[in-house]
Image (cartoon, rainbow, N blue to C red; front, side):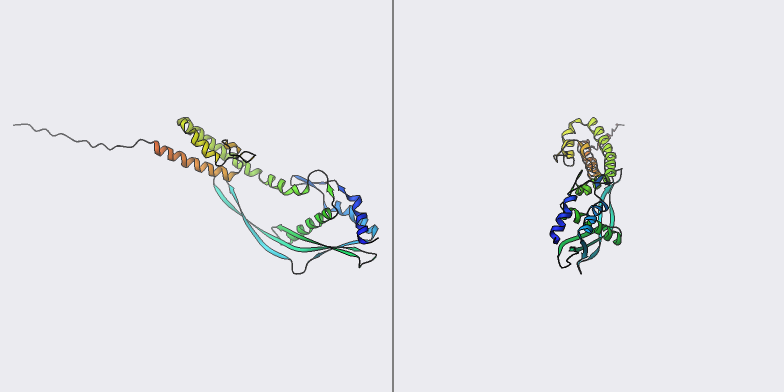
Length: 254
């Protein structure tokens, strides 16, 4: 068999793999499971797979970014994150061991991002290898799509942000409730202001500040409400009039 026929033989038994590990709030197929299914058939059919980093394509660069966060009392601050981004072009080479001149070169890529360069390189290679196998053989993975892991990871990371946002929303509720008890006629103004920040899950403007889950957005609304209420109080405050008293002098005739 030529290399294409051998690879077709390898693909058939691994058309579907069951996700076997839980992590970051999602299930995925591990590299060892993929390799255990494929390498046995590679040995049996006489096929080798060689990963290669394309010469002069490796890049190791610092990757710094900031996260806008908020404290529970509504103060906004920037958190600096310093990581390393490692990337390179790759080639995966399938070789027919019975006829080494019969081979296939598949262009690929590798990207890894971690706090340490070696960790970024290692995670990039692992991720690249796992997905090369899955995508080259068009392997279906049951359960959830493994590409959802970033979305689910972000959801896990945002749990703390939602908790902080809830604390700020409590302050907003207390502030709005107290103000409208004194000035119920201001309710339309409050609704208009809340709609600038609150969104429903469908992305439409909402008059309910409990729809806000981002602490930065909640902090901005709290700040704007304080400013708006202070402005309203200034506009409605009675003007102080200075009254000068005059004294009337009386004269008496002697």
